[in-house]
Image (cartoon, rainbow, N blue to C red; front, side, top):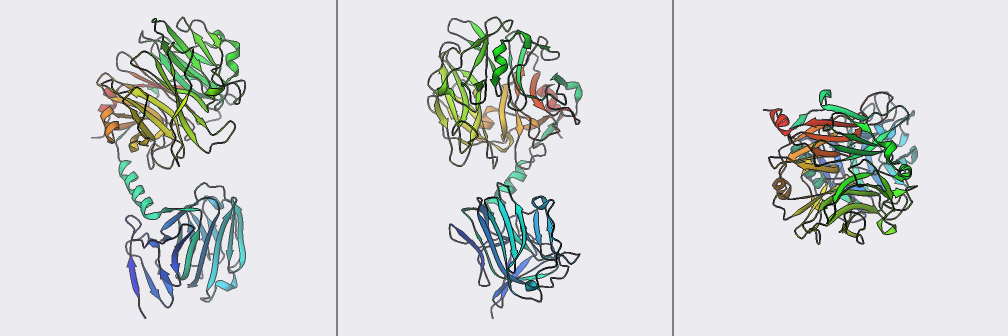
Length: 557
């Protein structure tokens, strides 16, 4: 009889990798072919035609993580010392299918099983060291658990990610004969472990918290129990004092509101009554810009995604030729400009034209099989635009909400993009020919991972870029933050200097569409929407004011 002892730990896990595109084999006929273990002192033993698992707190993982909807987990094993052992099969580290808990009954733990109960004794077929089969099957979002031929659980499982599968012996000994998972695709557990370790290290980027300083904060439009104020953008006039803000009512809802500040964002007046009546029918996240034509005439423009309904005529707008004193409605740009969201960014090119970027989806309606970033050019200050073309579409990722800006030397454009699968980092790409061609989208640094980037370059050359924080393991994830660093940090993939938690949202992730304005004295006015109050009031449009000299001084020593 040969006995093998294998030792490993999840953070740098020792794994013997399995083969096969459809089936991942972790244990086969009592041989460990693909296992990882979480504890440095945990071992498994191959003896008597089984893989013997024993440890009071270790999880023994399969080395492949299943992806997709239709998944089958098959385990053949026997359990010694089952009685009140809390032995379980674990899915995604949080969900336990317990064979027998302290009450002597089978049990379920974890958010997936919230409201689900098992009030029964374990099947007789798993007692007394008998070999039995445990099946976990997910098909079309329905999860079924079968133990020793008896159906134990049927429940809805709407999770996008199934997660790793593990065995927890706890106070028992598990003798595993077979352990396999069948799925459309798999992710390497080893790769995930390495990625998690990297994210945790990157999460140590310094963080300055301004979110608890109400003296910096100004409520531009207060939500009420009935009214949700959402998705603002801003623009400044050259006088260094005047700022305009537009937003929509309800999440991605209708346009209509506008406010103006004449004192750098400290006080605001509503301008809704000055706007064309038709503007109230414009849909989804309006964006405001100041464009100057070839003759030097400046105009303010506000574009939205569609007119009338979300499936209506694409990209309607309103325009002002007198710095916002009066406005008139302009015709939609037309079907070629179908979008999920209108221009999220514009930059003036060296020849005087404007480059506008936005994103669209697979088709109208709710289909989101892919997202892609589009760009178009205007040579007449915003009246007409060139045929849009796709500049960023990435297999397995969903680039959207582009933010384009120019390098300090003027020779390069950088575009930061939200990545809507939220499985890693945000995306970036670069152009050295004024947007004629772009580099292939690549990952940003960890600290720039977020949704709807918008930024300013300060007088000392540094960048402050605000967004909804989506960085893995970030202590401010889901809140409104700003990244501080240099253009060269972005270009070279360096972490940057630090991040600033600007505002705290009482509803995580539903916030962060920012306006960023730089005043002559170095003050940055960062504006977003969020659930500002932890009460019945819905989302509000709120700004906060800060200088990098202030946040520099608050850095942890």
